[in-house]
Image (tube, rainbow, N blue to C red; front, top):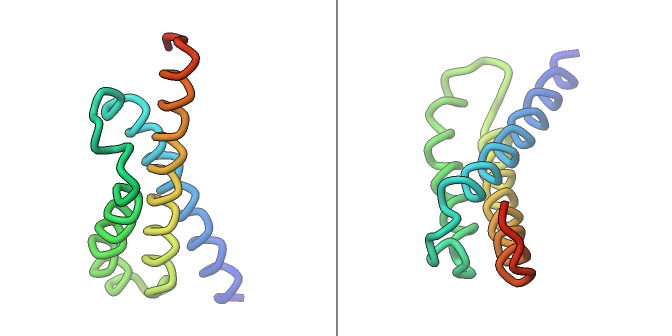
Length: 95
């Protein structure tokens, strides 16, 4: 029972990290060239995982897997947001 709840929390946290990172990149980092660098998603994901590690250490139902999944979600969100920006720039469309 607690395993299922823990897995659901981990998936929800990963999805939340993805959505927030994608939204942040599209709105705040639209004109920042560094977000298009290949290492930007990796650095953002590692930073998010390191920041989440002490938090998940304190919570009873989640573990280090949740922090890792959060970091993966943030990295995927940064990558997806940067890709969407490149598509808009390439097509000449404005938001």
